[in-house]
Length: 234
Figure: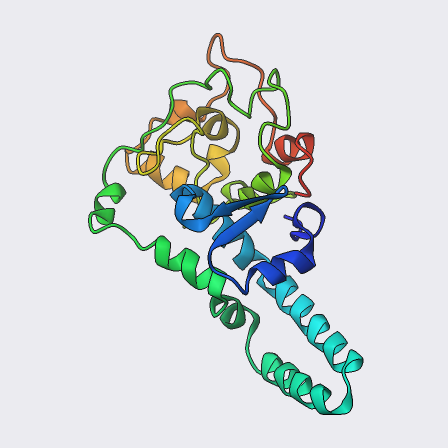
């Protein structure tokens, strides 16, 4: 996955980290409290995947502040730069107000453990507006949404989405009652460790991973193809 550079303007992402009320994507600011849980988790995952890039951008920002300040102010900015360099990227990111709020809003429910044994709920077939369908118009969702959901799929060049990677939910399902997208399962499910475990444990029928059911629409061949068609940097 690419960094937030092209889709989100990297410097603006660093600026967003300093507040804890909204997330801006595609020129639209959404209150964190109003976001769906899966959207918040996707944003949090995007930020963590790019922790080092954002950390380095903050370093550059501090260096510019030092260079542009008068002697007295430069001392303070230099101290901030020195402190920044003593903190590992992930630790720095997790201490930012935006990330702390996203984590707070995404605390697991008391009954979360039940999901490990229950059948994995999923759509039976791609819906009429499924973004995985090649016959659907692109651009329904901003490109940064596809960047944020990149870790629901295997990386280009091989490998699998690791255990603990998020799942791509059907966009028509309600908050708290999400089900896996049928198009995503058919294209990327076999390369997602969590989905393979669901099959092995009997929580999911392996047929859900087959995109050749009779009457199915033509689907994108990979997450990369889907994201690229929608203007994402992935």
